Each structure stands twice: as C-alpha cells, then as structure tokens.
Length: 96
Image (tube, rainbow, N blue to C red; front, top):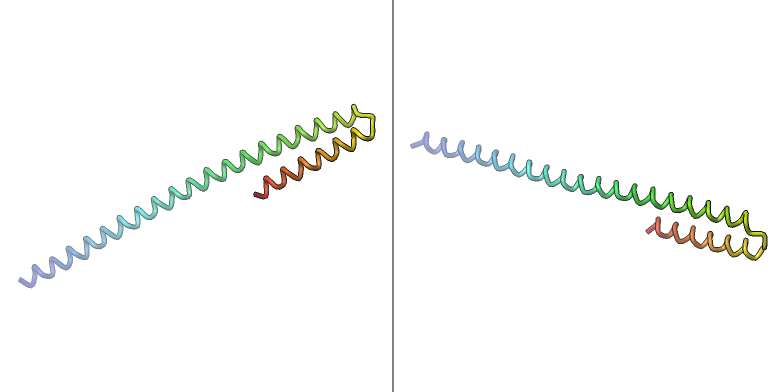
C-alpha cells in the first residue's frame, strides 16, 4: 500500500517535470517566432532606407542638372525652394 503511494507521487512529479519541459519548449518557440518577425521588419526597414537614399540622390542629380541649364535667377530660386521642401518632407517621413 505504501509503495503504491510513493510510486504515485514519483509518477506525479515526473509528469509535472514533463509538462514543465513542454511549457518551456513552447515558450521558446514563441520567442523565436517573435524574433523572426522583428528580423523581417528590420530587413524591410533597411530596404525602405535604401530606396529613399536612391530617390534623394536622383533628385539631387536632377536639380544640379537643372541649375546648370538655368540661367535666370528666378528659376534657380524656385528650384532651390522646391528641393528644400522635398528634403524636409523626406526627413518628416523618415522620422515617422
């Protein structure tokens, strides 16, 4: 009779250990899933930053070409104002 009691306790303890291991394993897997999502999000951010940098370089090159072609002061001022406004908008987008 007593040995059965002890055997039951031991089995209960072992079951609890197994359940604890399963719980830890599931928690670990969930954590890895979250990590994968943040890694994917970081990659997306890097791609977005690269695209923005390329666009800014293209705009600057186009503005320089326009400035070289433009002789009138009014045209130069208008182009400079537009470029400043565009750069400010890009900075706002990056900050958001």
